[in-house]
Image (cartoon, rainbow, N blue to C red):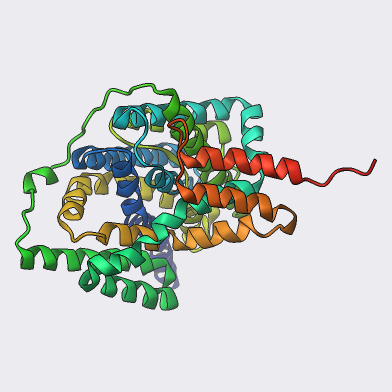
Length: 402
């Protein structure tokens, strides 16, 4: 009788051991996808992508990061999770169309991937990026995010019937289940959009919901290289890859740096011509697969990352349907969801940028230029914000006593 009970107990533990990380991986996918895909679409559209090209880009990002997670987690038996560069997408959304249009933006995406690969093999380049003062990098990111985070306010004047319920749901969930606040806001927005489409008899192109890839031949523009590729590379490294390794380290995992950057960089290059802007190591969402909540045994948590990768591959075909829904939705709905998704990131960036009193002036200058959206010589404001911030910081740095 005792042997039978022990066997049943062991079987139950085995079942829990298998399904617990699987559930964590599915949750990580749902939270990561629904909370930031709107930012990706906003960024690609701002770069000049057509709805079909934006859908192709979202599909490419899902596929490349999904395959990357499956390969890395299986090979290294670690919960290595990847993500599209949400800060990078926010940067694209604030930068506006690149000089040379969408083909030039695609070329910049490919160059970003090459730079990520090179960083994995050239330690000096990685140290150079890590040497960029945190407050300057975060101030640049904060300035990029401001226009996007203001979108819900502007949308209140254009589509209040849909936007107000979205804001209410987001606020309530922020109080009781913050992790699900943005996914719930997206679900509310989707329901509101569907009701509005039905009431207003808006035309929906069901044929465009079929997933397909729109290939774009990249164009090489020096303005896009400096104004898009360089800031996209810096923000992806500083706001995603470097923090992502730190998050994994906090849970006792040492990320294989060269393999991770090679996978994400090559994945970025592979997805660029299909419209994907950049993939990278997950930062905040990495904890969903690497924390003890995913599995008590650290050696079993890789299953959560593997499941996340598989789940993204399952969600990839939905990209076309999402773009069609967004196109038919009332004005400002997509921007509202994107803005709400970025508020926490904006708050964290501002806190980090202004935390050191000695460098607040430099950070403030960086923030203002980045938020202004100014473009000089065809180069976006993010690059000039970074350059100005570093110059001001260098000029105002304390001088050693003579």
